[in-house]
Length: 217
Length: 344
Image (cartoon, rainbow over all chains, first blue to last red; front, side, top):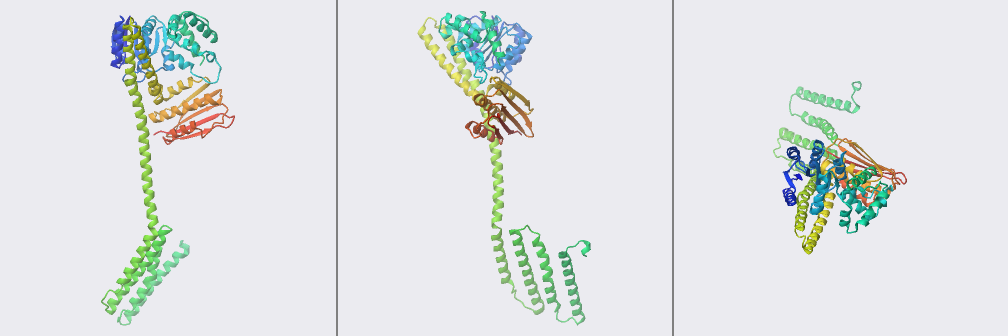
């Protein structure tokens, strides 16, 4: 896998590069701002770009805008956006019309190396990976209307959050320290409560959940 | 004369002046024709000058501001006329009778002392009040200016702290979890060590979460990154009831105004979600001359307490920017919070 990294904080950039090289992922370019990211993508044609939301010069959402622009130019490019906070508005802008090959994770997820590398693979392969916090925010107490979400148990919410990360049943079971059978049961419950058609493909499952959450708003 | 538009008072004055002048000239002519001996008409001139002089000074005194100032002016006018009479009399006794010593000295000194003391007592309050008012106004100007500076400086400082947290402590903790993750991968054959590293990572995650909550409380990231409108849209999307957002402002807001407006809207929407049982709510941002007007309303059950701690907290925030907050919440008639924040 060939990767471009856009991150302005040297400490993080270098750590990330070291981590990826240790796992035989080729970092073809490291850049510090949006325009440089677009040049690097045009020049190296990588499989994946890892982009920080806040980049110079404005340190607001430059990275996000550059990532969206990069996708427009190269629709098959995988984009993983990293941020120190999650905004559902950013998630939906990033996903836009084309959900394939999009990831949006909190930066500290890097620390769980195996899950992080797994997420990279899935995004590069065209999957969708959303941080569980996106789901948490979408599920935040809404007050008023009784929708399917308010009927979920705490455990089912946790499973839903991990599903949004595009994880397989086995990975979810591992994270929650339960049996894969229990996970399966939770997922069936969630789909029933939310009135979603059952599907077993991890990627399509994320989309179904997302579609539901977006419609529910 | 009356037909020419003069009042009776003015008519009387002009008659007095003419009669005095005529009499003076007449007496002078009699003395001249009578052989020009002892200048006796001088005493008559002196007598005639007194009413004319009184007339002029009284006129001047009456034109002063009413109250203490006019009273003092009247006293000075009388004293002035008395002094002039004394001086002229002395001049005549010297010229006509050869009196050498300056006999009015003590009288003049007495009059001057008395009138000065009187003025000082009569005007003393007034001088103090005027001085006090000027000092008070200067103080208010100073306080207004410095408070505005403090509020602006505080907002800028909070932004800086948020940015420092983001680029400093938060980034370092993320780097730490990354290194711990790398370390964890290298000790897969030592479960004890791996567990320790895992624990350390969990602690780091807690610290990151806490810092994130702290930063969000200081300046919500969307507000810092994209401004008030985007932040309010994201806020409204979090509530289940339909929230309409109407934006009619093109102002670029100061960080302090933006932050205050955001927290007012957040608090009002939270109250709506918690207490109102509303089906619909709305947020409107509009420009008024030199102010941003924020209105948050709902169609819930109303009856919100205008003196509750939530509203009091918002009011304090708004008043720190010289703004105003009003709450309308009739029982059963929905709730409307309206805030006006002055903007330069």
